[in-house]
Length: 91
Length: 156
Length: 100
Image: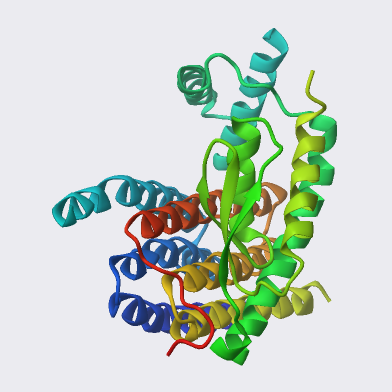
């Protein structure tokens, strides 16, 4: 029963993630779109650990750890570099 | 100094143990990974920063955990009530913490504390975005500052 | 008993994720959306991880699950600050009460 429960929560979070991604992608500023990095890190990690509990096995926890790490690196790299060029264009 | 490095190595080996899910048959890899992590940490943290007081860690973690729960509940409440419940503002506050690890920890932790989001950190001050400036923001920030001061110990 | 507690924690986690998304949809500017995502989603993840670690088959698996949390917390706090700082540097003004 726990498996089904974990799986349904995972599906719910997936739906949640899709709605949030669409909302973030609509913008209006590039900063809003960068919120996707946060969304993927947290919701993605949650979905992965739930799938691990729903029968996917512990290797999925490693995937969640790596995803969280990449979200952190990706987000900070974006904030430091990608916007700089945009700022230069405006100047 | 040696004590700091020994603690660090122990921490890395412990992390490895958790990542390997308690299996010990891969111990040569554990040695390699710990050595690599030690090398990276001395490259990134050299000279060694002022270490935190291990005795202060449980207290800080409890403070942090409790306030991140409060922050989450508060923002969930505001989200359900919509934007009419907001009264955002940018505010400037002075920081009394010494530059370095303590300040960086503070400005990052502020994003998870109730109602505050660190926006900028400069020589003398801290710029915050607050969701509702009717809340006792300054008291919250000072409480976090006090918790971090306890964590790092009194300055010499 | 433990099963019930785990289920309650998972449901609470799902609620906080939902609240984070609602905040993202309803809050007016990037700064307040950052508040919603950083705080609500992280608490949601914390609840989910706690709930699952109560169900874990061994102590070390539970510890591994809980290890995901500080990593994501550090990631969200750092990324949140970086985004807010860049948004400010780009001159994006925060929404004030009374504006549309």
